[in-house]
Each structure stands twice: as C-alpha cells, then as structure tokens.
Image 1 (cartoon, rainbow, N blue to C red):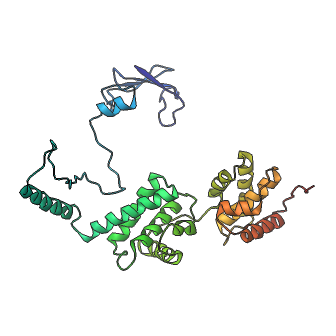
Image 2: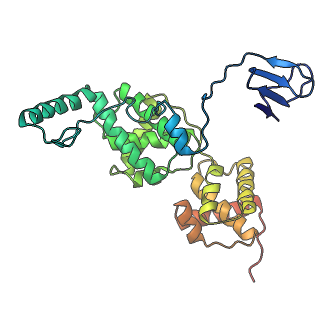
Length: 310
C-alpha cells in the first residue's frame, strides 16, 4: 500500500522542491508525486509485519514488552508469593515453605543491593505520589528522576530528606519544561515544609549544575483561564497584556502567578467575562492583595482603559 506525505518540512524533492511524496511499501521507495523522482530506495520498514484492528488484537500479537523508561527501576522483577500453594493449588510441605521463605528473603535483598538503589526506590514511590496529586505528565516525571539521580550521584541527598530533595527535583523539572507549577503548590503535597524544598532547590541549582529558564507569567495564563472557564479571546488578551508589561519592564521581580492573575482579571473585565478578584486569586493560588496590587499597577503604567460599570 502506498502512503502519501504532504506538507513535510523534513522531506523535500531535490529536483522540483515538492513536498508531496509517496512511500511505496512493497518496494521500499520514497517517490516524488510531482516529477516522479525516486528520492530513496530499499527503505527498511521498522513497523510490525502483522496487522491488528483492535487494541486487544494488537496487544495479543505484540511480542515485545514495555519500553524502557527512566521512571522507576529499569529491570523486570519477579515476586515470590507468600501463599503456601503450588501452581496447581495444592498445599506445599513445611520444608518447601521454609525454602521459599529463604528464597524470597534473598530475592528482596538482591533486588536493591546498595544503599543508593534503596534510596532511589523510595524516591520513585514519592515521585509517583507527587505526580498523581499534581497531575504531572510522564515527561516531567522522567526529567525529575534524572535530576534526583544526578543529586544522588553527587552525594547531595545525604543528610536531607528524600521528600524535600524529590520535591525540589520535581519543581526544577517543571521549570525546565515550562509547566506552570509554583513552589508553594508542590510544597503543599509534601510533609517537608516550603523552606526545606526551597533550600534543596537552591542546592540543586548550585551543586548539580541544573539550568532552568526564568519564570514566564504567560505560562500560567492558559491554566488559570481554564480553571476560570474563560474564552480563548480573553486568554489571548491576557497574554498581550503580559507582553506589554514585559516590554515596559514591569515584570522584573514580580511573582509570575500573581502577574498572570492580574492580566487575566483585566482581560476578563475588558471582554465582559466578569470574575471576582477572589475567584482569580483562588485559581492562581495567590492572595487577593497580590491580584489587586498587580492589577492597579498594570492599569496605571500601561494606560489600560476599562469599561465603566453601570
């Protein structure tokens, strides 16, 4: 079966410059649909040699396991059950039970041989809990475990709680991938206080050589707008206000979440989607005083005209 590729930025015909390409599966050739030039031949088909039409059929015919992930222990492990029965359900003898108990003990010991591996296993459990409560994507969790492993190799975890270092790694991963999560929000779901998480975060930046971009208030706007159920035009207008504030030098030293909340509040008023300062502050997880101060500052410095309330 031939497959046609259109609007491809990577593949382009060197003869006529067309992007309309056809992939001939039977011959393994990539052909230009415009001039007929054969761009590549004897291409290797890396797909499966079987076909499946349902997820159950695809899972049944697949002969590979789950992909290797940085998230968690990268090995296939087997647990020896505590049930004193064999595969047929028959009761095993006392001697066999003692032998299975001894094998289970050594199997658990062999799974995590060093203290670093045991530490990493506890950190993975904490990361799973944080990721579930914060609703973080897998890419952020993978990056967080990478940062934690770097801290573990640099001996930065010794003398500090696993929770606080892992929370700091999650915050650093969110900052790197520009995911709008504040330090207060992450510290809220950890037993360690905000001060400990912030101290560990500064330690990671200093000792683990982690570079994170500066916080951008525009990253918080879509999330706050979604929680307040605002329209796309209002969210776009809030981003324009933040861009104007950045060009005017008003964003330096300001909390990005509070600045985004104030821009959302102004844009909602301009577009007739009234939201109270309390609702906006609750969605942005900042105080009403912060929203009020940033709101007054933006309106005054940028010369924004608001509709008169009737």
